[in-house]
Image (tube, rainbow, N blue to C red; front, side, top):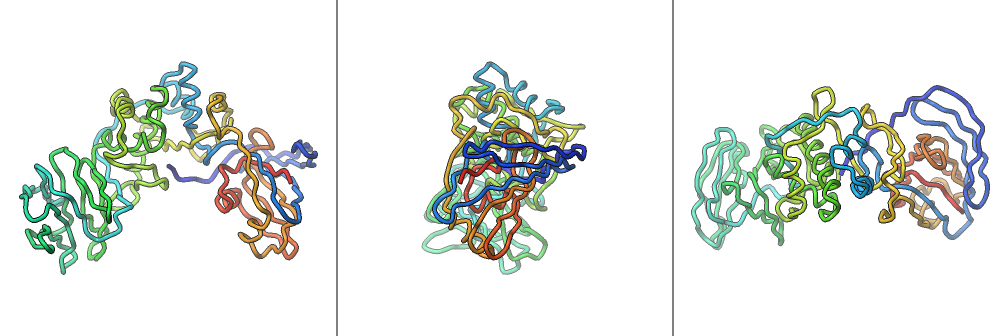
Length: 408
C-alpha cells in the first residue's frame, strides 16, 4: 500500500564502539551517528555453499501505522483516535469528502466494456450531459476511441460491435449510484461511481479506465483489501481513517492529470464493490469523512503490516521513528520472523561478485535490535565487492523487511 520514501533520521555526528550479539558469535561493530542514520561496520561471514539464516523484525517499510500494531492497540482498549494519534503524532482530525479518481490498473485495453443494467447511462465528462443507455443486443456496451482520438464512440454488442453515439473527449458509464460491472478479459469487477474512458493527454491515442467515486465509497473498497475486516473495530476504524487520509493526500498530489491514485500496492489496494465487507463498511460509517491533517493539509499516512517494534522515520514530522509497544502481541507472525536463503541465490542476483565471502552492513537507521533497519551493505565477493541498499536486498530475496541480521 504504499510508496517507500527516503528515510531521514537526524542526529549529531558521534563515534561510539559497540558489540552486537548475533546468537552465534559477537560481531565487532563500530558505530558513527550521521544525519541520515548511523554508520556501522558489521561483517557477517557467509558459508561457501548452502544457506544463510536470517532473522528479522517487521513486514514492510515501517513508516506510520503498523497494522498489526493497530490491532494490538485495539485489543488493549485504545480507540481509533488514540491509535492514529500514536502512529501519526502531531496530526489533527479534520473532514474531507468530495470524489477521488482511481486508475483501474487491470484494464489495460483502450476500451471500457461493461454489462448493461437498469439505469445505465453515459456522461460526457466535459459538460456533464447524461444519456440513458437502452437495453440492446446481448447486453455488453463499450466506450472506445474513435478514429479521431479526441472523440469517444459508445457501442453495443449484437453479434459484433455497433455504433450508438459518439462524443468529444472523455466519456463515462454509471448507474445512478448502483454498481456497474466492468469486463476485464474473462472476468468482471463491479465499481460504484463513474467508469471513465479517460484521455491521458490531448491528442493521445491511448485510454485509461478511471473510476471516479466519492471518498468514503472508495475507502469501502480499500479497507478489507489492506486489513482483515473482522479485526477489532477500533483497528479497522483506524485503518479507514489512514486509508481515507492517504486518498485525500493523493488527491492533493495527483499521479496524473486524468487520475489521482492507483489501485495497487504502489498506492493502496482498491477492489471496488468486490472488496467491500460489512464490518469494514461499519468502520467507514463510524469514521465518515474523517482524515488526518498537518498544517491544514492531508497527512501522508503511510502504513505497513508490522513495525517489528520500531516505526521507521520518513521526511514528514508526523512519521517519526519511535518504539512501538503494540506491535508485539501474540497473534503477529511478522513481529519477529526467520528464514534462510541459498548463498547461490545472492550470487545469482549479483553475479559480478563471484563467490560471496561475506556481507558487510555499513549503515542502519539506528533504532532497535542490531541498530535497526539496514540502509546500506556491501556484498564482499571473490571477484569484486558490490554496495547495495537494504531495500535492494529485501526485494531481490523476497524478505519481509530490512530490519534483519544474518546467522551463517
